[in-house]
Each structure stands twice: as structure tokens, then as C-alpha cells.
Length: 134
Image 1 (spheres, rainbow, N blue to C red):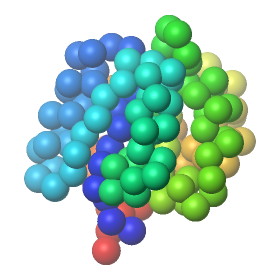
Image 2 (image 1 turned 135 degrees about the vertical axis):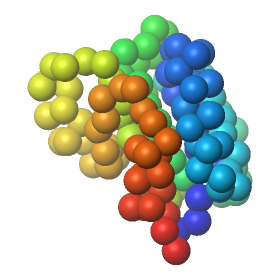
Image 3 (image 1 turned 90 degrees about the vertical axis):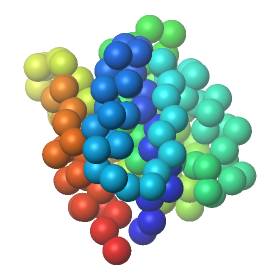
């Protein structure tokens, strides 16, 4: 599977910026998009549903955000066509140490990984090698 774009969803702009720097350090050609909450992310995804080159291959999704949190985003994402979801890896990220979040993420078929923040270039590199190595 090829990776052409990544969507970072986090209400903290500095976290989105730092994560985009981590991705740049990997020296891969990929577009990075950012959203500050689940609602903004869904708007981006709606615009890209018909364009497979734009639809993100990897989504880094924060759990706790205003407007629309990660869980509500996942509830709405569930209605997307399976052929789109098959090409997208969702990684939940959180500072929460509540085991219920990990259990809930593991039960969601759209969530492939669950990471404690902060992310790093090593974590992004591992994700890309695991899911997008050719």
C-alpha cells in the first residue's frame, strides 16, 4: 500500500506542528493535513471521498478534543465506504492513562493502533513501515 497523505487530528496546534515535523524527518514524500477537531476532520474527509489521491492513508486521531472528540469522529467515520476505510490506517493518540480508552480503541475495527502521546519520528516511522512498506 502506498502512502500519499496523512491527516493529523488534534486540538493542540503545537502537537499537530510537532507531529508534522516528525513526519518530515522521515524524508518521505507525503502531504500532511491538519484538523483541530473531529468535525473539521470530517469536513476534510468529505471533500476528499471522491479523490483517492487526497484521502489520507494514515490518520492520527486524538481522543479528547472540543467540538467533536475522537470517539464521535469514529462513530461518524464508520459510515464511510469500506473500500475507502481499507486504504486508511487510524491511530488513536492520547495522554489519557485510562485503560477504558485502550479497551474501547481495541474494540473498534477502524482503529489499528493506540499510542500514548507524545508521538515521535520513530513511532511514525514504525507505523509507515508496518502498514505501508512496499
